[in-house]
Length: 367
Ligand code: ADP
Image 1: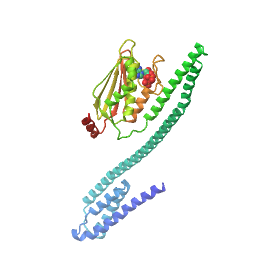
Image 2 (image 1 turned 180 degrees about the horizontal axis):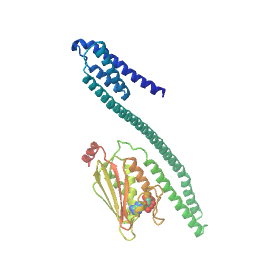
Image 3 (image 1 turned 45 degrees about the vertical axis):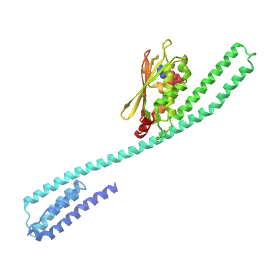
Image 4 (image 1 turned 180 degrees about the vertical axis):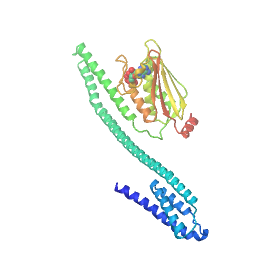
């Protein structure tokens, strides 16, 4: 409060001083004007004072009027017409009002800019905290999954050994139990591997890395060879671009989407999967379309969550595949979504950034 009052007093002080200076200057130039006092110095004093607000502007106008009447109409007996004095007062008040408003608008603008800067600062602080807790969570998931690997592998190996050593002594129901334990241990190993891949997928990408999506599809198909052959699946891919994503991660994305397309198929129908890409606003939109059982679009968002499954044990899976795809795509600034109709098939779409033009030119000349 005290500070505000000090600033006010200073601005009014500036008004008084500027009018006094204007008076002295007007007196000193008077001989050049043959007895007439110019009002330009007073006008300058009013403009200068009005820059500090309406009050200082009005004070300077009033003081200038008093000085003009006192010094140039009375003491120095100079000539100043009443009409020019009246015009000066009107102009002085006008300038004070306009400048006062401008100054208020300026102050409001400054305040909103400061508020915006503060909000921005808070937002980036929150973003920093969020990304730190995300990283911690990812490290925790990675460490947990990693620590679980050894005991699960041991359970699997020991159960296997137990069955082998007691092959003759175990009755059928004990053998069935042991087989179930083996099966569950295998499933748990798959889930842990999925979690480890998922944790790695969210890591910040290396901007220099790029890969050819066509080659990534080929590698995914090599990994899925036995599944493709066993289901007599048909997989066709159109021309695919070079993208700014590590090949290993791109293979994981295609591998999950293609294997889902084969897995969630109709009993008597040959699985058919079509992969294509189109350029849109500097990014590539990929699509992986199948002719399978489809899914209920009410769950179109939730299926991308970790361990989220729509179908039961009749379709094997860990519920991590799509979460992993989402983590890879989003860590590169892309988006993934699904369009489907139950019984008619499903199409997954995802966007990825294009590789820099120099890399694309190089890749085109090589292929
Ligand atoms: P998983 O296949 O291991 O269960 P995903 O994360 O890959 O896990 O998929 C999550 C769920 O989304 C699946 O359980 C399934 O219900 C549904 N889904 C995924 N892909 C398809 C598809 N191509 N057709 C129909 N449903 C699908």
